Amino acid sequence: MSHKLVTILGPTASGKTALSVAVAQRLNGEIISGDSMQVYRRMDIGTAKVTAAEQQGVPHHLLDILEPQQAFSVADFRDLADAAIADISGRGRLPIVAGGTGLYISALLDEYDFAATNAADLLLREQLKAEYAADDGEALYAELQQVDPPAAARIHRNDAHRLLRALEVYRSTGQPLSASWNLTEKPQHSRYQVACIGLTCPREVLYSRIEKRVDIMMEQGLLDEVKSLLKSGVSAEAQSMQGIGYRQLVAHLEGQISLDEAVELIKRDTRRFAKRQQTWFKRDAQIAWFDITHYPDQAQLLEAVLAEIGRQFGED
Image (tube, rainbow, N blue to C red):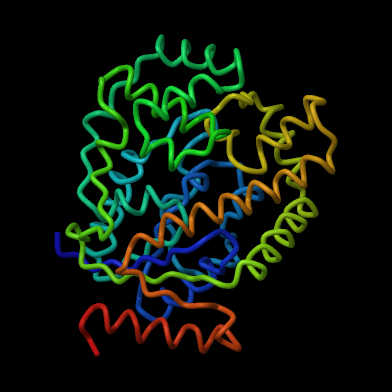
């Protein structure tokens, strides 16, 4: 494929949303969400979903396309994003993927083989869930470390959804999930002509931004959002409800922890998630990194990013 594509990547709370909108306005672009949670309807606050006001008239794709009860995979994302890119490019506009779900972005840009991940054995899935519940996943994580060390290195011990999915793939196919990733230290972005932009900042700055954002989410009504989802019939076990912010508040509503404890866990888990995002993206030498603290205002950052996009597209 020869479509041009801009990706704006980085850890949560690094400012991707505002920058992607500004870039789209300047380059006649449309934005494709690269976030694994923003596909869900009625999950707005906890996913930091871009609001209509923040979109500033720029078309956005892959937002609010599923009900919270529905599953969503990396293969689903790539298929939908490919279609959106073709549509946007076909109308003479520039597709811009903005997000922080590293596996999704890599799957879109690189050649992945999803053949091993398409089988869904419901009986096996229920068996794995039962095994997980028996000891909070301790034995399953030990199994993953044995049968698929690369996946175990990337999947957090407490990430139940990804842990179960990795073992589902292994037990149903005999092949490790990591075999389908086809990752290298320097991915060759062969599917598109891509300009990769990354946002970063010192850890203490990022963590402060994360904690402020969680506080704002709570002020905006994240707890009520979780209550509403549960009241509408969304299962606490649904894939969507395993997202950061949702699972901690579910634990509070079930009486397992206090509200203050839930908020602190959201902040802690978001910091850990941001660290994993940074680790994932660091492997890609093609990403041009911009430390947001080096730019006094958004306008200067935008000009620097636009110049880098032009350079990567060979337009300078």
